[in-house]
Image 1 (cartoon, rainbow, N blue to C red):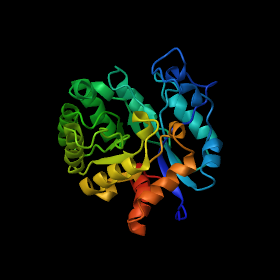
Image 2: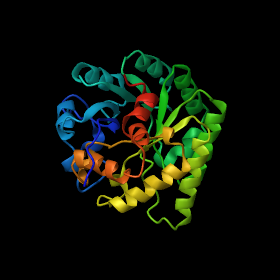
Image 3: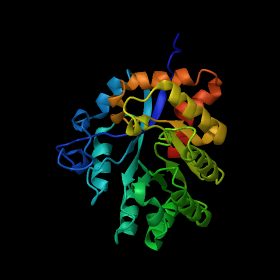
Image 4: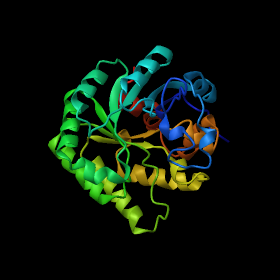
Length: 291
């Protein structure tokens, strides 16, 4: 029998206003060429998220969605005009831009902005070793903003590059996106590297991890695998550094939004109520300063 869902805070969602923003990545002629991209390439407002959650959503963190990568404050201004639930935002930043300092300063003036994201992906190691990128991360930390890092955690070169930055910027806080995208084969060396890299980053005390994004790797992922990955995380990092997130609306490729959160509750059945509260809301509140 399923347990009753608690209210949750979702620290990784995307809203799309296609007539207002650019969203180049959602257009069928542009990468990524997902055959099911049309299912998400539509207007998605806060009301859609609220209805999908059936009233169980206590707040959220909006992660930049390509609204306008050259003027990322336009997306934030749009959100602050239209959103009514408690929320924070992670804005787009181009860490290689000559304007990175002024863009960080401008984004800091918006009340919802708590973090910034430059999608690192396969370029993580080379980007994080660039002096201009390191300067941008240092400036971000000085302004009290965190960095949402999106890259393959099994990439040890990238992790070493990030550890180098964290060692030199002890006030920089990093939240790793989609750490549930673990290597598919749990017996492969890559899975061991993923787990070890989680531990190295967690030991800095500056890094948190979102359990999200399973659909990015395998559209038809199954709950036994999700449970195994979660248990590996719980054995590897402090529970205070881990939070459930959805990647809405992309998570709906796999299942309805509320069903995802019910599944999260089901796979945490052995945990205490305090541990569940940390994973469902309290850690997101802490890392993103949601009130």
